[in-house]
Image (cartoon, rainbow, N blue to C red; front, side, top):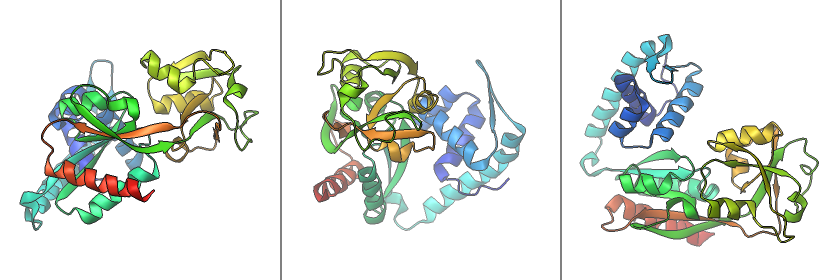
Length: 298
């Protein structure tokens, strides 16, 4: 099995899970959130086209493909570490973990990451995908250094935030839905539809995204819940219900059986850049400076 198109971070994640045979312990060792680690391993499995772990309710075990990959991954990890030591200026290189919720700020996030990589050679960026409402906890635990996500994602004591971008909101629905061919719709046209949401969302946040109550006085009807964005999209594609999301979801979760139609008469979603209060490390300061420059160009 060849490690083609596999990042150094994915190799490190795989080795950690293979060593611990427990996603929670591996996540603690790596200092990232357990759901993010699970997502990264699933992404690695998709890249390689092979299942690497058997996941049971109380145990994790390597598959035959995982056992074949492990010695190669260990060697690759040793190689990456040696290259880091030999790279000029590597002693001063700083790892910056950037937590991104859903699609972050879409193309703005992409431009920020590209600018940091191109202009900050002493900053090594690691992208960490965060589930909804992981932002604040991940920052406080030190799992990530900055978070890009909806305004409520990393709010609270000990956390600083500033607006990064505004995104229009769209109705996510099956591609064959009667509203799917429209250029845009009004929120009142969704009053009679059933909605799917992410579970365990604080009521004020859920109500804002669902526009509850509506200008018409109607209350949206929730018909199903998912445990993450991917599950949410599956429910929408299956016709179980519809959802309101930020416009960049169309880019990040595009698929043939889904449609994303702008809602023209509701406020946009605000995407924030957040970080821990107190001493700001040089890598974080560099990232903030680049993000503010990119934001000012819009």
